[in-house]
Amino acid sequence: MNVILLGPPGCGKGTQGALLATRTETTRIATGDLLREAVRAGTDLGQKAQSFMDKGLLVPDEVILGLITEVLNTPEAQNGVIMDGFPRTVTQAEAVDELLASKGQTVDHVFTFEVPDAELVRRMQERAEQEGRSDDTPEAFQNRLGVYQEQTAPLIAFYEQRNLVTAIPGTGTKDEVAARVQGALQG
Ligand code: AMP
Image (cartoon, rainbow, N blue to C red; front, top):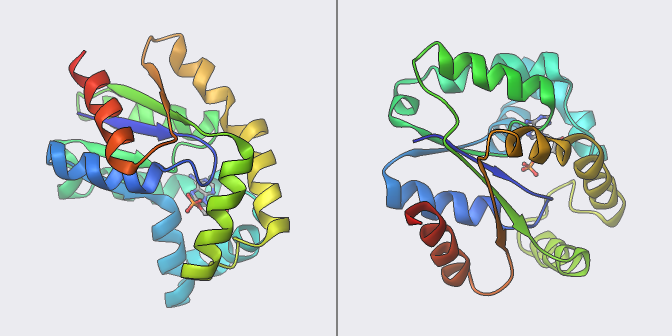
């Protein structure tokens, strides 16, 4: 089963992706985590990505497409993946379709998590204190919200045409949200 988690920063994709991956015995792949690792390790990819990430902008598709190809072709990805943080543009979505098709697979579900902006900002402030991410500053976070609306939210319509999208209310405890996801998968 291949699942895409879509939604603005702070909506709970990471938390729900981890829970869902455990429950469905699939692998969660988060491009944001992989990019942060690459930045820490100082790799070529990390150096190309860092300035975009710090500003809250998307890393260009030509940089991301190689990463997506690599992760979807790893052995752990063959039983299905929970895609957290990608695709984020139509170009990336088309690449995901092609890569899955080459394995005889498709995107099976897309979940969006709906959380009011004020709550997203509150969560960002909480995470900034806990994790100190360089893009959890008020300015970068506003950019990330804007970039989500402009470049990533149009993917909802892209997948709605294929009847793949379920909108999940993203407020409440993580177990409550997980139960909604589970209910949608079973229903
Ligand atoms: P995230 O952890 O998913 O919020 O991602 C953190 C940052 O990494 C984003 O603000 C982007 O700069 C970059 N990033 C992560 N995934 C992607 C992607 N699929 N395409 C472009 N940029 C990405």
